[in-house]
Image 1 (cartoon, rainbow, N blue to C red):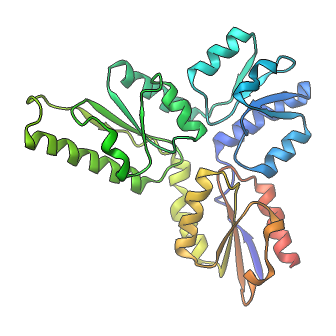
Image 2 (image 1 turned 135 degrees about the horizontal axis):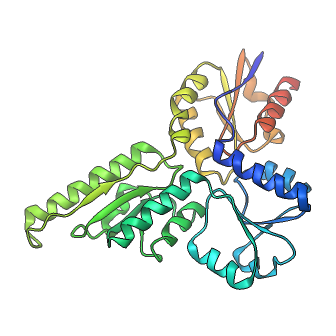
Image 3 (image 1 turned 45 degrees about the horizontal axis):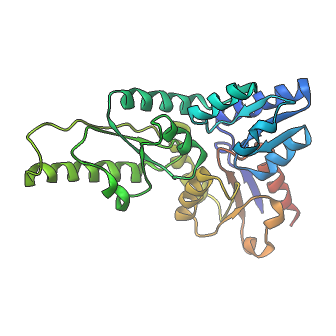
Length: 291
């Protein structure tokens, strides 16, 4: 049985940057706090914790005075930075540059009094940071079914959490356009043009993996997808893999492998999310070979 690791999977450059920033600080001081999980991968968190990384909540920020505090790749709302400044706590901002750019664009439209709509998961750390750029006024939707909370008479701009899927983003865009057109047709407000923009802010490294993942999944008898169960990107990518290969299995680490998955298989592929380290996928591959 041949076992191969998907060379187009694993950490995106934003996650690589964040982990490198954390490791650099840990090498100097031996201790670093992080607000929330540095990435959505418990195995990588365990590795960094052994080096001195301590995960804290927002409520615990006040206690983090004996070391610096890392802002993870997902980013934070402005209030977190203001609160840290008031408390005299030094922050290391490791927000992914792609996320930072989305935050900046949202602020510009908000300052122009646009209604901000964000395609994302309401409780996801990145989305919380994006909503924070609008003083909490942005409307978060996860599907076309949730767009009724939008005021279709207002100038509006649609953005996306960077790890969402493009198909749903464009479906939401089209649905908003249709609703705005309907408002004009029934004459419920003055004949004033409504300005609508749809900004596809889904990370290219996430969306760009779809085609290669489909090919990799189809080329193997069995596909093992490695990611943290809380990884939004992991869920999206695994769904893509499973659509191409019904013998796809989602695991966090090699302890979840089951021997019967590989019965009659000549080839097994191991892939992962943008928050899955390469070393972990290699470890899973070795465990499969050992089975």
